[in-house]
Image (tube, rainbow, N blue to C red; front, side, top):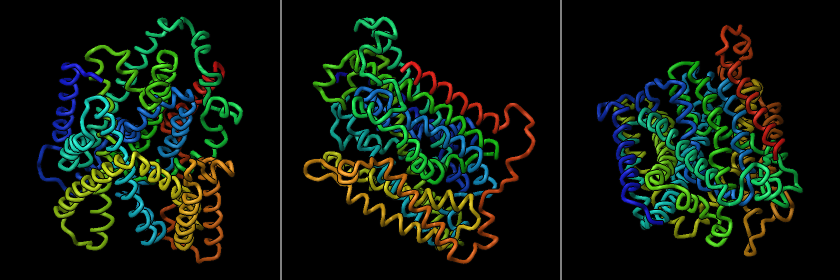
Length: 542
């Protein structure tokens, strides 16, 4: 793809600008305490918390993947975005304020307070591997692929450019730099996606589409629906509605409530109210991807079906950019892609440094000086970035097969973490022994499921294809099994101590008098009502 000088200049200005802003937001190169470096001094307002949560969640993989998904199966994958909304509202009402009140610095720290040190160790190891391989490694791989596609850059140079720029402001600035730049990047994300959508809609008359009915006639039946039956899935693609409704919450609990890379922004909130409203703001933003990231794929199906089928559906987004955007706007949209990439990488780098400094170094040596913790955090971020670069290059050499493996491992472990967290938080009787046995059982079950469902030489997966249990239902049944183990072991072992039960849900905190229309409960209910209305409208016209 040929990029004009103007577009290259726009991209360069954005990349340099975001590095400068990140360093400036953190106060330049001045000395920072561990609290300011790892948790932004607990100074983040709800707007920054919400926008940075959104940016760290939406990666380049999402944007490019959603366009391809929209082309191949319509709005089906939008159900994942909208199912995140109840999770985020739940996080804002029940989980985030608890983290704030207990002054939790890392999620593994919570698991030790609620259960024991063994649970903390498990969570630290899993969180670091998740950040290193999934959040950073996969993002770098996708970003390098995009830079090669747009600029003709060798994968090595693409990875290095992205890594160096992101590492500069993340390593020197800490969470404050990450959160502020992510807020800007969320605007870029939405702005770039809106441009693609608007220009795509404006081109529809050229394809003979003059109204909504003619648009529906040009796409596959059921493409606009997100709640799909097995029959629609067989014809149009996607995932059955019941599988998402059962399976997504399992992945959502792990991802939104316990993934340090995601939750760290909430932990840096400046007040309990900011910790509540921030995730709800993210929930509101999560309405957008269906209209501005998946819909462009459907527009591409109408406008460039033959071209994309010939080039490969993975080229959907790049063909959209090349065909519909004028000079100048191409640079803005590509900058938004890089914004998505940098935000995901920065979030994971910061969480990795926090986990190593607080959950490993401070735990082993409680008297470690504050300055040394920050220094160790910076070294950790650098080392993690180097390892992630190597991983992304190996993944590229293997044609992306390693990416599939890493994603599968993550989803295989989620059921045990979700079961231990949700039962441990809402059920005082849950014990440390139950947590350990559930983690062990979940690990064995996850490895077994992963091994059995690994595609053979013909591309056939035993559990998914032969047994007919798709990955979302695998997550659900794994979660059910882990819950059963947790409950049984809890009843067979001594009750938790009072100190451990202090880290469980307190019902009385949520029945205080509502004094304003801006009360977090009113906001949460309003967002859920808006979601139901929009979903109803889409399913009605689908």
